[in-house]
Structure formats: structure tokens, C-alpha cells
Length: 184
Image (cartoon, rainbow, N blue to C red; front, side, top):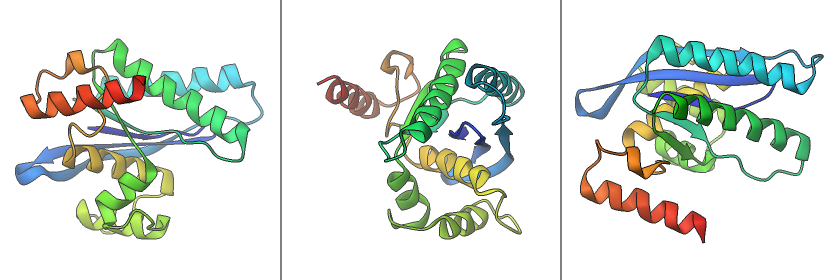
């Protein structure tokens, strides 16, 4: 499972494997960076190439991406949405299903509270993955939290229902219903 916390300057990426009992095992985490002094197209190209590297190296079963939500800063939302789109396209090119999870869903999954702060999410990610300390920067921990969330809720937000062959009939129905609701 590869989690992506999209951002144009810092994009968190994190990989976990599923262990017995749907426990998450840490594999890798990092941050893809782009130079704010470059034009947006070149920044996106840099990020796209890094996504390719991560996907080719780790070959995840699913890519879990933070669902972009409206903020007051339109410039931030645009860059975040563009990077989220790159992650989804990179996965789709490889036939890897994509899942979208909201920030509050991720916080609730890993901490028990949808209003948890970044520090609490980081501490819980470290605890859940049995790490001595929280991954840094926070973007990497957030990406791992996304992967953990999806591990625990595999049908929660799958895109591309036609590629969801590994799901139970109930999970496929849930994913199909979510897709239909989004189209309305």
C-alpha cells in the first residue's frame, strides 16, 4: 500500500505492507520535493518522475491519496489537486487501484478522532508501525497514515470499480455505490 499526501512543494509518500490481522508493517517513507523557483510544469514533471520511481520500486497493490478539499488559499488547493492527479494517473497507468481518503477520515482511523492534530497523528503512526520515533517531516507520516487508513478500510474509497477484483461482493457494492453518489 502506497500513501500519498499531495503537495506541490513537499509531497509525502509512504509504503506499508499488510501483516497478519491487517497490521501495518513499515516499508518506506519520504518526501518528494519540487523547487518553488521553477515553473509549475517543471515542478509537476519532477514529482511525476518521482511517483514513477516509488511505484516501480515498491509495486503497491493500492495507492491511497488524500482527497483534496476546498481551502481558502486557491493556489495551495490547485497545486495539491494537480499533484493528487499525478499520483492517480501514475497508478492508473500501472493498473493499480486508487483510493481517496479525507483528512478527517485518516485522523479518525489512526487516532480515533477526526479532529486530531498533526503531532497526535505522527505519534500514532509511529506506535502503529512500531517505530522508535515518528517519521519526519510530517508529510511522510501523513502519507503512512493514509496507507494505514486504507489497509483498515479497503473498500472505503476505491476508484475504478472495474479493477476491484480482489474485493468481496459487499466491498465491490460499496465502492460502486460511492462512485454513483459522486457522479450525482
